[in-house]
Length: 192
Image (cartoon, rainbow, N blue to C red; front, side, top):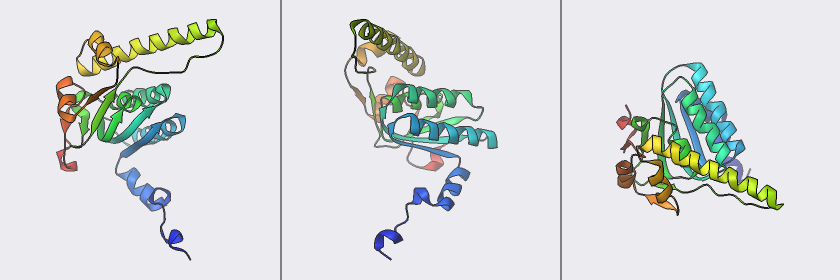
């Protein structure tokens, strides 16, 4: 038996999975895509079905596919249990969209978290008429983002648009001042 055989991946260990489920926690790490969104939403819905106790969603993500982020964001708002989002590492782009699915008082992060907001991006190609349609859809998506982040932070959509015209990085202190973050925590005991 090799050393690799001895090093069992905790994520594949059924006992770890059961303990994690009992903890009422959802982990969103890495890029956001349809597979990660499906996994997160399945976990959220199962926990919501089990009880109305709060659910903790831990996020460390560079972002990814917008509609996949929308799916998780909307389900956080849709389910009955209170959802607390806890950022760690970085909460960027579609990861930030998921983060603001929770109410402001339920948006937490660990001390070294960084936040990134920016305009949605996408590749446009094909026939001119198709490119015009795609450009219009990106404009609509950007307007929706500005409104969503405006509602979540208390900032005017015009300010969100101006701030996110380029990559807009925030420290924990800046994220609190901006209205993106509710509180920096250092221990699970800091959660309500």
